[in-house]
Length: 297
Image (cartoon, rainbow, N blue to C red; front, side, top):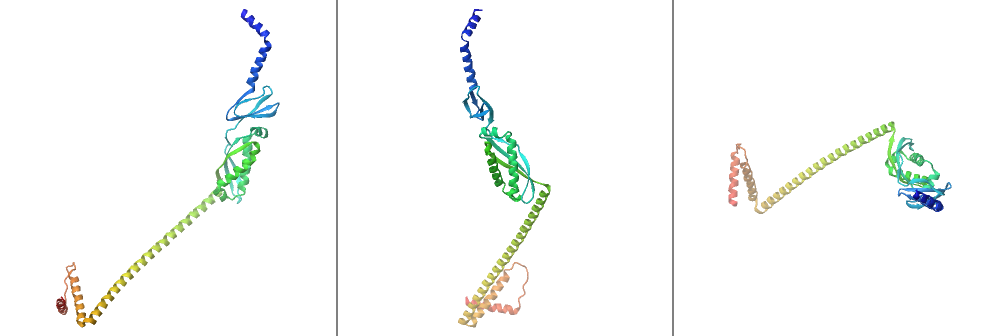
């Protein structure tokens, strides 16, 4: 009882001091704000924007200032969206897009727009339709990177006033209606058939060229062989003519005898078993040839 009485007496005598201490403690607790690395806090005073708190320890005026909005500054991805668009050549296509963004200036975002995702999605859909409408289907399919760059640039300009940065924009798919797909498939098959015909014709033309080259080579070789044989014959004739001019008829008879002996030798070297009948006159000629050859030797 004595201790309780003493505490009550102390509290009664120091009530003001205790109240002030409690007020200071509460003020410190209310005035210190620790902001995570991935967020920013928007502070209001009497309903009006006061400041934006960055990551770390921050101080505000307790009872006057309050944290009205806690905004994530991490990169976000909009849900993939599909929107219809008509190209300049009147082809209906369905474009699937994906957009990534992050909030850089939350003081602009929270006071200028209520639903960030819906606003950006609507903006992207309008820009995609407008951009696709200025291009033909072939351009959309072949220059997708250029289309993406244009869409990203225009979306970034549109959302800049909201304190938002568009980090990435992608066209995931360009889908065509059934009739257009069928027409494109027929065109593709026709192109493949045309290329196959061109390839086949090119192969035949090349084969004809190779055959012609082979025939030309064979003709050249035949002509070359005939020219060599003719040169040899001409040389032999020249030698014989010179021998006749220098030695008279006996030289010519010697050349004839030499040819006869060579012919007989060639017959003797044959690998067959045939019997060769030589006329008596031919045997006499061979005898004369051998005599002449012996005499020359």
